[in-house]
Image (cartoon, rainbow, N blue to C red):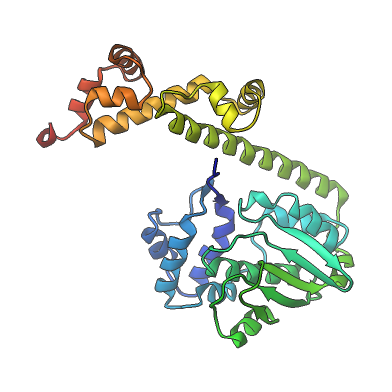
Length: 335
């Protein structure tokens, strides 16, 4: 099963601030991607929405290289938990390694890791080819600005590697990053002087570090809980088409024993049968209100074997029959 990748809104809030700082109204960008004005809602959103967001941002800013453009307007600190892991660690390198354990709190696409060889350290960002170039170009700038602030100006970038083949003029990368950028690379990565990893943090506090790590572990567990529930819901939808969607079938698709899936769902505070019921109810309502499908077809698509069983279940869910629900919910001209 292909998992839908998501980003936390915390990853994009600094971009909203940068849009505002650049003189661009962020509400105009948000409106073009179907989001309400006033900022991003809490939670996570599909990574696939990045393409539409950056297209809208580019056009509203009038900037072809909008990722680089906004990187210049980003604040150094964003109030993220990962930044506090850095600050409370003994050294910059220790803080970086702590933060990398929890990078998924920001995005499913950032499978980041650190490599050190001789006097060069490389932060691999783990993104795949095909993401809008503005996102990694902005992210590289944000990381450099953050690392420079965390080390009080001692961070020295050497090279930014970008997988896309077409980008800005070389001089613009040097201006924004303080180092050259290599286009058409095999990876998204940032190379820098390794000696900065040993730099001590003036804000080191072991007790705060333990507190921040505990909070990060809880937040990561919540992300994984929501991810499991989302995957189970998606599989229920796929399997219902073939009149399936049993716990055993879903567990098989997730490559885990049924008992383990039941336990993990219980830890997430949900029951498998409730997820199936919720999916069937929402799908039935959508088909009744938004399509003209015959009831017999809706019965089949929601995984029921008999219309009578569907009718009883729907009335139990909604308090009225499918026919009554459809008649009440559609405008009079469509009935």
